[in-house]
Every structure is written in structure tokens, then in C-alpha cells.
Length: 56
Image (cartoon, rainbow, N blue to C red; front, side, top):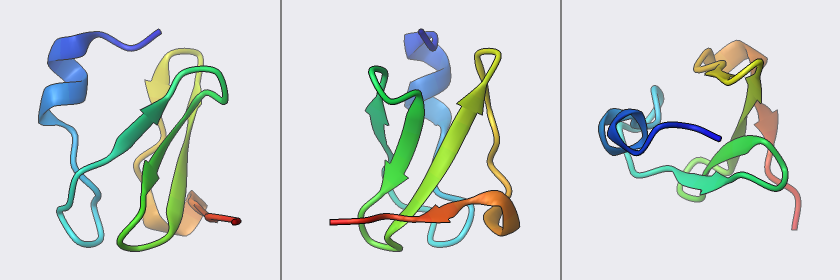
């Protein structure tokens, strides 16, 4: 589970928008860009080229 302080400062690296934290899926989502940033070993992988497309 990510620290609340960290979640408060994280933003989408592509659009600088708000991210949705999905702890049960271990990911951060940017609805505006439709990208999913995965979390590995409690570290968010905030690289656009490693993000995956958000599925409906």
C-alpha cells in the first residue's frame, strides 16, 4: 500500500493530471490519458513508455 503523502504529490507524467490509486490491482490510473501505471514492490513505475492502455 502506498503512502498517502506520496499519492498526494504524484501526477500523470503525460498530462500532469490526477491519478486514481487502485490498491487491489496495484496500479495508478490516469483516466484522461487512459493509461495505467503499475506498482512493483511498492514503487510506482511512472514511465510513459511502460504504462499500459486503460481497458474498459
